[in-house]
Image 1 (cartoon, rainbow, N blue to C red):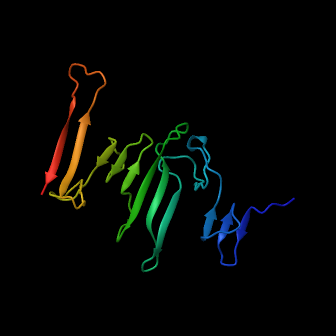
Image 2 (image 1 turned 30 degrees about the vertical axis):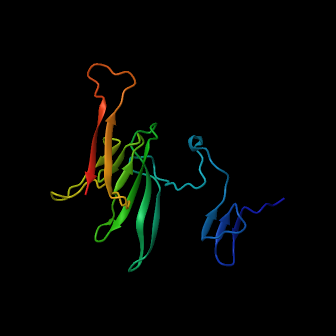
Image 3 (image 1 turned 60 degrees about the horizontal axis):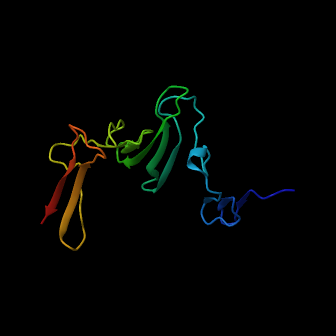
Length: 173
């Protein structure tokens, strides 16, 4: 017997796994386990394995022509055949330049903003001329209290030379 797998409605909406798609493309499927190697939607390239190859999803609209305002990128992190490490990048559009990578999450979990090679859990880089804020923390709560930044090092069993404690900066008006 035949079973319907995909539907195209009279409005032009395409449904996979659903008979009533509410968007131009709607995919309905069961939950996938993160470590299983499966997904609900895959975007792949057919290139031979190499560093910086992989799929891109563009999200855009009309602005003096059709444009991808941002691209979501999944790429191979290295050129080693047996190493499948990948990275995720976000590349917003910049007038006169095109889509430029602004943020990267590596296979090791490091997040880079302004760098394609984050060396720390959070690595923020800027080449802008002096005096620019690299990290802004703002509390807009009406209680008048300023933002609090806490950096700490804790240890279950302190040893000689461990840094125990924290540095706290509290901004007040």
